[in-house]
Length: 227
Image 1 (cartoon, rainbow, N blue to C red):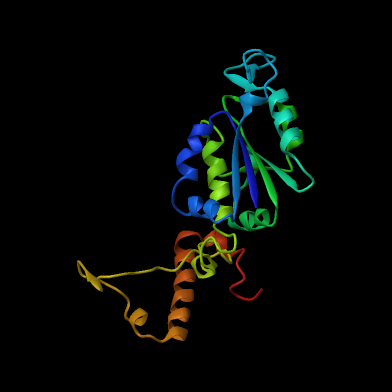
Image 2 (tube, rainbow, N blue to C red):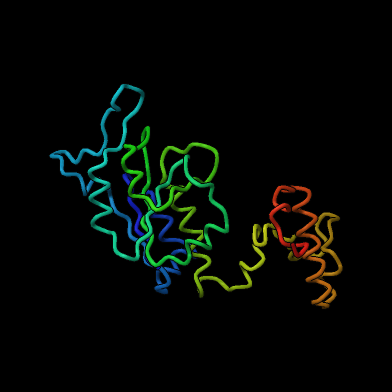
């Protein structure tokens, strides 16, 4: 998979690309991630990328020319263009799995007061990571990229993500490690039983219980009852 990210602040991605699982995925050639500075595509003498809004209003608006030219430069027949915006589809695990099937993602990070409305015509999909506002789309683009990359074969073990929260619209089951007894809180004995069938049954029951307690809305979408 290839991911190209368009941003006004490339250095924000330094840590993201050089640590932990994402770093290893890049080194093992599971994914290629390129960060492009939108200013490099500006045709203005001062690399201008934003201007005041027609009709007045607070803040600066990203201009269409640099972003259109950047997408034209990067786009191929395999590309899928994502615009990160609070007005987009709310991001979910199912959407991460959908995007995993794409060979090439181009992610456009907005900033300032917003972007010229015509930039929306470039996007195959607009995505929001939640009902709140960030200073820009950089963090959201990292969230989207991370959630997809960890699903690529060989990045982490399949067992590590098969029972993740939101798989089958259920939250994850509780997990424990040493010591067995910590400040009077003990590990459930079933996890020490060695009986894998009973352990799997207990974990499934705990998933349903936790989801009922914390996110009952998810159960309406779940297939746990075989519907």
